[in-house]
Amino acid sequence: MAETDELVEKGFEAFNSEQYEDAVCLFEQALDLNPDNVAAYSGIACTMIQINKYDEALGALSYALTLDHKNIQLYSDRGFTYELMELYDLANEDYDQAIELDPNCFDAYFGKGRILAFQGCSGRAIFLYNTARKINPHDAQLYYLRAIAYHRLKKISKAAADMDQAIQLDPSHGEYYFYLGKIKLLELHDVSGALLDFKKAASLGREVPKEWIQKMEKATGQVWPAEENEKQ
Image (cartoon, rainbow, N blue to C red; front, side):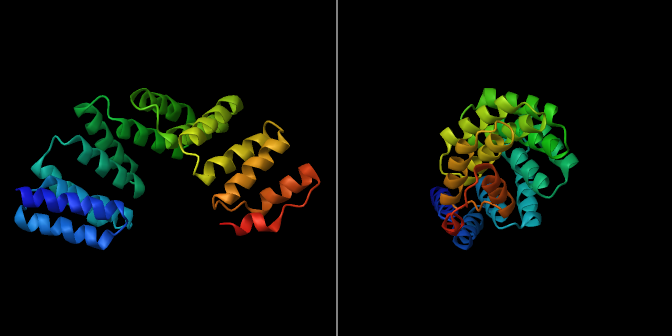
């Protein structure tokens, strides 16, 4: 059993290092020793999701659930896989099952919120994002997506505040700066602030589309430095 656990641990280490083939091999070695190891199936599923092999991920997760039908993380992960496949009804069923097993399942509330946002239900999405935030107030992606929902509802100050919070939690994400720059330029008419955010986004590898460069040049009367978009 100790050897199996060690192989699973090494599998997740390989996964975290983006060595996905090695990760799968290690998880499969663990299953050779213990065919009922739920963690190994979970690891295979995580790896398959990462390389966009969703059917394989579903197979691993569904089998793991036959071994442990009350495993909250398995339901949450399978719900996420269905969400990626745009099978939203099935995703919600698994997220609901995760919430039934654990009313404080952050991933499930967050996932249900993402689905509602994708379907254009921004207000209902925000309600679920708020629920998820009470469970984990330190997830940058949550603030980013809630900011987008607020923006769609024309609640500009809340959108800007959430994007600021996302940046504080993860200042390495160029998309957050880019979206905040859009809000500042189009909604708050803060041209200098938008310029700084766009430049920061570009420095982090987030290309600023030509249409936004044109908007910036029109607003500032200045030519956007070509090298900014070459830093990605």
